[in-house]
Image (cartoon, rainbow, N blue to C red):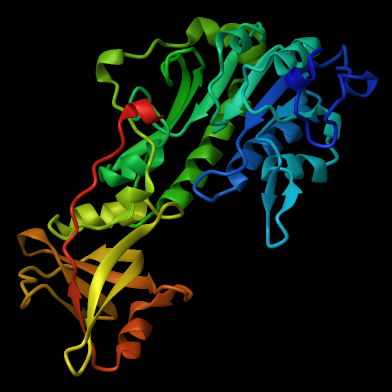
Length: 375
């Protein structure tokens, strides 16, 4: 095999599937695909993987995790050492064989597909894997590839379903267990769970909750997935009701105070974890000297009071919060901030550190979501 096509693996860069990776004839092989982290929340994929490990050890389940597919090792930490992805490290910590952890750059690599076929997996499961799965991959497992998607499909198809749902201020969302096809998040739905969304939950917490519920759906449906009943009962999606959830870009992180406070509050919740939200403010000294500060906005709430019309967009302080005047006389109360080079702090601590200096808003232009072509 051409060396340029060799499969990239952690701890086994030039290995093939050996006897140590042979799948038991008594167990149906399942391959798990998960990304290293989502929204800086590395336990998302690990939660699903742990549940699969635990279920496979029970006598009433007749499958085993035959291989794990994740992102290639990357340089991390101060020393920039080459480290396995959090998912790979989690699997290794649980004693999973290193030669069964696949780390292709792309799921369509011939060497990777060759090794995957050798395992003869009955089923593949993805949890925020992040890479496109080509037809050659999807044709390998006879019982199909199943994805845990954190939205009520066909709503919020795409790279950022949790963030876009929170940004829209939805009152309910959910998680779907669906077969993977070539079209984006458009496969038949096996099961779904609906959850209410409160006004203060942030994206990382909601993501954890949705994947926890999605994992329960997966474990419950595993018998039907292996015996083929899931394919028979799965319902096609209504494409006419589909909405899109394009990926988040760092340029969207700026807050525009020409919008209403509720819109900005939802954005802060949606972009928590990554990329976060930021505001430019003018710091006016006691001698009218001015400095522009990039302030990370961490936690907010919508003010219960109206008529937040201040002189020349002045930021005030009340009830432990920085109050930013917004559109239609609404006010955004900022409870936590992070100044440049400092840790996250309560708004009161930041305000006290100003020592009499005033704050004003710097007007920013609204940045629209990236086109779906960037997914």
